[in-house]
Image: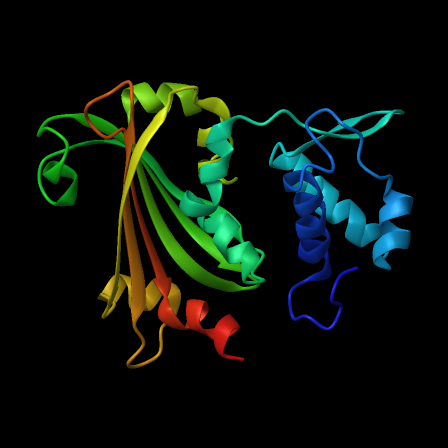
Length: 238
C-alpha cells in the first residue's frame, strides 16, 4: 500500500511503488505489469492517478504499453541508473514539484572565456539551450545547457521542453565516464532576482556539471542550474 497521508502527490507514490516492483526483480524486463484495475484495487487510488503514473513511466521509457495486450517493463540500458544524479526534473518530482520547461534560448555559441573556456578550447563552437523551469505560476529554476556538436547530433530533433537528461540517456549510446559536479550556495545576481522573483536576503543554489564519455577526452556537456534555496529547503523542513 501507499501512505496517503504523505504530502507527496499520489501519482508520484504510485509511480514509486511500480518502480520498486521493477527494481526488486519482481517484474523483470519484458514482464507484464498489473493492470490499471489491479493497481487501483491494490493501492486504493483512482484510475486517473494510476494513468498519470503509468503515462510518466511510459514517457521516461521505464514501461511499454502494448495496445490490447497490456503494460510491460521495458528493456533499460545501464545508463539510466544515472538519471537521479543528473536530472533536475527527477529531483524536483521527488520533492513533490511537478515542473514544466520553457525554452527561452537555443543557439550556437563560441567558447571564448569564463567557465566554458576552463575545459573547452577557445574558439570551439557549442550549442546552448537556455530553459526556465516553472511550477504552478512560478519560475523555480534557470538552466543553461551546453553540448558539443558531436553530442548535439545525438539530441537533434528531440523536444527540448522535455527532460534533456532523460533524452540524453535514452538517445546517446556512448559510455559515461565521469560527472564532475559542484554545488554552491550564494547570493543571486540581478537577473536571477528578477527571473526567480526572489525576496530580500534570499539565496540560490548553483549546480554546475561537466559530463565526460569514454569515447572522448574532452567533456561533451556542461550544465548550470540555479534554484532558489528555499525551494530545496521547504519540503524537508515542514
